[in-house]
Image 1: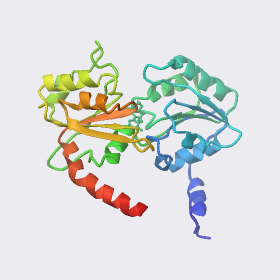
Image 2: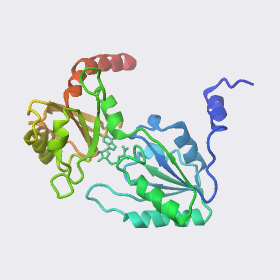
Image 3: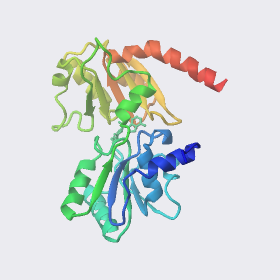
Length: 274
Ligand code: SAH
């Protein structure tokens, strides 16, 4: 019989999904926060797992989707805060798999974007533990959507640069001047700590201080906050507004499209509530 209800449709789809087997580890992207942005495969994996090892940034509403009775452990880094060393996380995943568990390693956004998913997958491969990677919606792109900023616009940009501000200012930091010279918009993860340095480096590297910029904090979450300012002012304004991580910084002409789109989106939202 053709499935008719949403539940039946989901069940029919699920029959074609890969199966999480005992002794296997799946590195699963949880998306930017809103549980509605989980993939269907991620949802099914949470329902199949015996053990879920998750990052600090995972929304509680996502963790509620874990199969009752499954073991839920928190591991992972949060800028500056206490963190479990990476080796220890990999060792834990391997131990759970060898104990015959169906293991989900749940990571914010996409597991392969600034998330050490690559490192964990390599450790699993070396240990001979079977694994699979499930992609997730990365915060850099979902954050732009949340702020009504198109990642690409014809005639405006031909690339979108995803970068990390993690090591900004340090010896391992990026060559911001080189990125500025591309003239392409930047989306910078982990930007809050080094926000002033990054903005200054981009201006020193040749971007006009008037270049449109936006900080998008807690995108898709109930406490989402969006700040738009000129690149030269963005750090001071973000401090004044007390914006906090997790947040991305978007820089470039694409940010201006928000002026037009955000008003229309806000009207729609207001109508939806009314
Ligand atoms: N793997 C993740 C990124 C992990 S790095 C992904 O693909 O999205 C953590 C950084 O992601 C944060 O410092 C922040 O820059 C960004 N981030 C994660 N969730 C976010 C959210 N809801 N809103 C804005 N930025 C977010």
